[in-house]
Amino acid sequence: MLFALIRLLWEMYERLFVRFAALDAVEPGTNTLLFVRLIRYRGETIILPDGTTLRAGDPAGELHFHSSTLTTFHSVGGHRASTTRLAVVALHRTRQALRHLARYVSEKEKYRSVQVFFGKTLLYRGALGLGFTVTELLPGREKTFLSLYLRWLLAVYHPKGWRRLADNSAALVPKGVWISRRQLLHHYQGDS
Image 1 (spheres, one colour):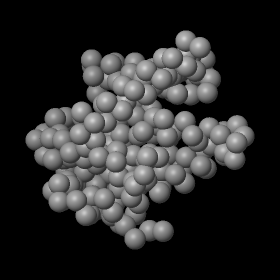
Image 2: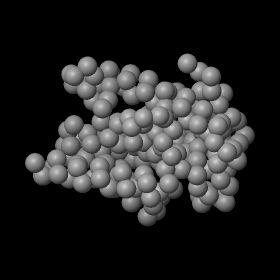
Image 3: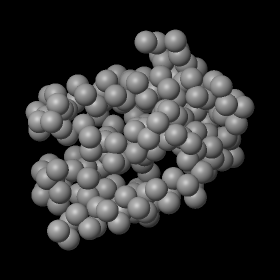
């Protein structure tokens, strides 16, 4: 009961965050997986494998997963998904979202100057196969806060709840995932 109330309150907070943080849903409908937000990048210079460089002050697309949509992956066809089935569904759904992202940023004037899209996540294990570069986050307050925040999200949304944090907690370290506009469009524009 308490856990359900916490999750309900958190979902209300997330809806407000989407609105006030100016996140753009890249997919039509209410079941969007991915949001993007135009920001001015404030971190260390990043050079991606294709030579694209992101420097402090450059426009960037900050990516956000929609947590409540992620939870729908845990049951497939009304049944609890196996870990393997969950990975397959998540990969398929993420590829769909990236196709929508490629189309969205190609069509929206607001994102025309963005050369790099990035996120900070615990869900980086399949990112290389999706065309992303994965990097360690620099130690410090931001990484510590982000780690606590993402673990909180995992506990709130994972079917195991707080018990999930005990399962291989050493692997629950956030990392940066980066993809250039060129790579995004190459991999996902016109891809069906």
